[in-house]
Length: 270
Image (cartoon, rainbow, N blue to C red; front, top):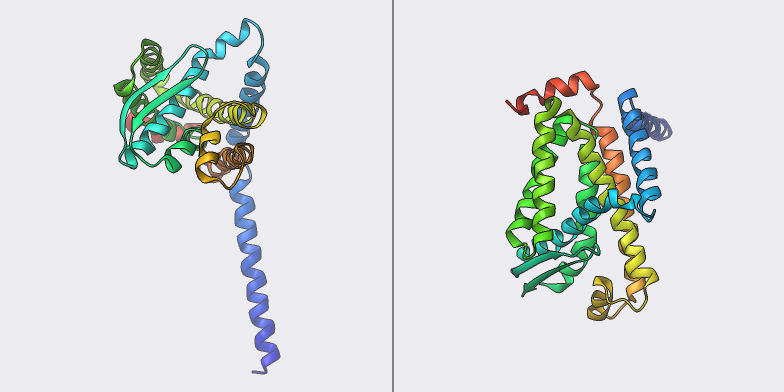
C-alpha cells in the first residue's frame, strides 16, 4: 500500500475516533428531563441563598446552614491535621459564623488550605450526589459521619447543637417518604457549602487585607505569594470543584425518578 494511502487511512480513523469521543461527551453531559429539574433546583437554591444572605431578619433562615458549613470547614482542618499526625484538641463554632480548630503538630502547609478547599470539595461531592436518591443516601451517611466526628472534637454547646440538629434532620428525612427528601437536602447543603466557601474566600482573603486568615498564615509560611493571591487561587479551585460536581452528576446519574427509587430501596428505613 502506498505510504500516502496509509497516512490518509490513519488520519480518517483518528477523525472517526475523535468524533465518537465528542459525541459520547455531548451525550453524557446533555441533561435528561429529571436532570433538567435538578439544574433548575440548583439555580433556585443559588438565587434563594444569595437573596437571603444578608437580608435583615430573613437571613436567620440560613444561619443554621451557615454554621453547618463552618463546621465542615473546621472538620476539614481537623481531618487533614489527623492525616499529618496532629493531635486535635477542639473544634468550636461561634454565633458570628466563625470557627476555630485547635491542634498540636501536623503539617501547617496541608492543614491551612484544607479548611476552604476541603469544605468546597465536600460541597461539590454533595452536589454531585444530589442528582440521585441512592447516592444522596450514601452522601447523607458520609455527612452524618463528619458531624459525629465534629461532635467528638466539639468543645462548646453551639458546635454540639449544630451537629445534633443536622444529624436529627438526616435521620428524619431518611425515614420520611422513603428518603426521597434526602436528595434535596443533600443538594441544598452541597450548594450552600460551595457558595459559602466561595464567598468566605473572597470576604476573608481578598477584601479584608488586614484580616489574619488561613491564607495570611499560609502566605507567610510560603513566602512566595500574597494572601490575596492565594485567596484567588483557592477561589478558582473551589469554583472548579463546584462545576465538576454538577458535570459529574450529569454524566453519572441518568436514571429517571422511578428507577432511582427502585435503586434506593435496599437502603430504605424499615
